[in-house]
View 1 (cartoon, one colour):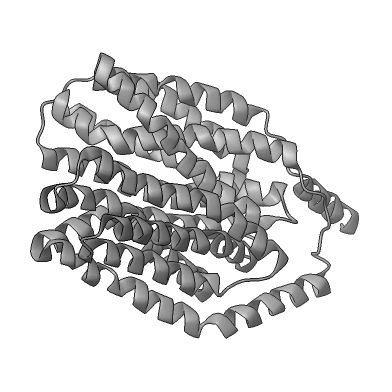
View 2: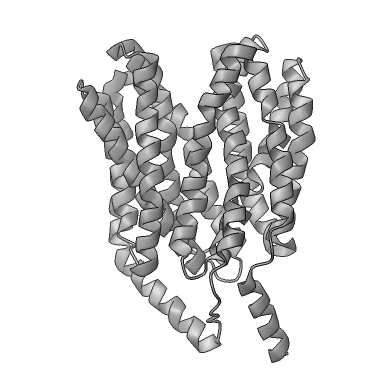
Length: 395
């Protein structure tokens, strides 16, 4: 793995800490600031909606003009926004701060994924999966780090939480010239080796892929939101046990992301995507019918693998469907298609209020079936077909 991929993955890890930090702040905001549940939930909405709207815009911008500068800016804003949110007593300022954090997080992802693809060499899925796994790990450890800091310092601990973002932003800033030089070198190498392949964007398959990604986002947000509550209210466990269950799911998913990238480079993206969603169908069905805590905990491991396995291959596939708009593809697959999954959370909340949390979790079992159908009709990217034809002609 080259140092550029490691640097981008590290930046992704730090950036996504702040995606996982805000939900962990809510109990402290409610207890210390006496916010209502609605007021606290609006902060999550403010962060997600700002990120959802802006992420494709940054993607389009990075397609027209190479914008490595969005990497240090993004990670820094992501951390500082969360830092300010913890120390201010003004709710309006707090909402603006978390929205700024969302914008920063949105700024990082499209360019980060675009550069990961450019610097990946032949093993696209392997290296892009490393980049994606960095974000998954950040998302997983974010709540843990945030909770410990706020227990130690109170809400003012968010200032300490912002420090890694400032440091990472500085590191990325000092590497901007190196990124530009590497991009120029990659472009020249491709021209010399004849690897420049011009193919049209495939918008229809990309729309289908986005719908497939949305299915994963629905299951992810559903489990991320309701798994701890399921552990407490259905399985009769403690709050700490519920948090541990969620950590097991996410950490397992980060490992699965790395493995899936390497496997899909060997056997193909579509096969890995379908395999992940197909495995998820019986696993979720078994999970909702298990009431033994030990068995339920063990099941989280294969569920985490199945849920995260399709992710990095779908990001790479999206970049291949839109080779002329790779930044936009990255913004949608890494950001928009994921955050939109949160829109379904209120529906699951309504099901929980009226029929119980078990019914809400059970309703997720239909989603992987839809995903398998959508994934099965994904065509092979034209850019792959052109490259295969080119290799045949050369040989």
